[in-house]
Length: 134
Ligand SMILES: [Zn+2]
Image (cartoon, rainbow, N blue to C red):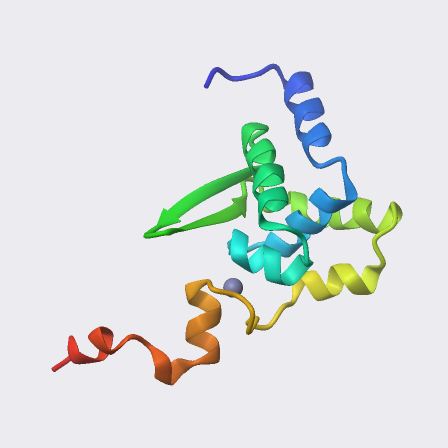
């Protein structure tokens, strides 16, 4: 992709984060990574809707992706944006406690991602992993 002039880059990034739902999605990704099923469980939004928001934010270079098997993990392209976007979210309608909750989540029982499954069920790690040590 060709490098955009700074003013276009700036307006594109701000446009891409400019709905309450997207600000919540970005806060939920936080400084780590999250897959769509994690965001779906956390935010109570439909998966198709979340995927579409993520796609458009990726087109604007706001988020980046990493594929791991059948999972795609999303992360912020620029982690330093997190404090800015949580402040904007709080200013425009998302209560501070909700943002705080999105930023610090425990593993989610409804989630299908490897992180949540491993943390919630450490003894249910697939048998092939265990037998590989023998
Ligand atoms: Zn998860």
